[in-house]
Image (cartoon, rainbow, N blue to C red):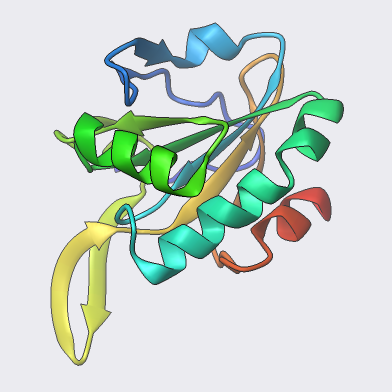
Length: 151
């Protein structure tokens, strides 16, 4: 697997959002994109992260950013997560983990001494021309927007 770095062209993707609409990187050309990967809808850390991004969403828009979340959850799970927390941005359902793998956001994790494969929480800031401007690998779920704006 090729490790992505700042300055690389972001891998293209195509997958359904919570409503079944196909979302691709191409649709964001001309805008900055906050592409964030998270493990699971409605878990404490993922909810904190999504709500922090929601609470700062207008600031993102004012600065020319779009926000897009990706997890392996189903479209139905995303619909419920969005509704429950009034999220203003789309969530992509990557059940086959193709996007997660393309962005090196799927890999080995360890919890309670047990190794397993799962989503690696990380965020990519992608420029208007599709290049990676920043990669945040140590996400602070409660203050993620602040991390992004400090880039």
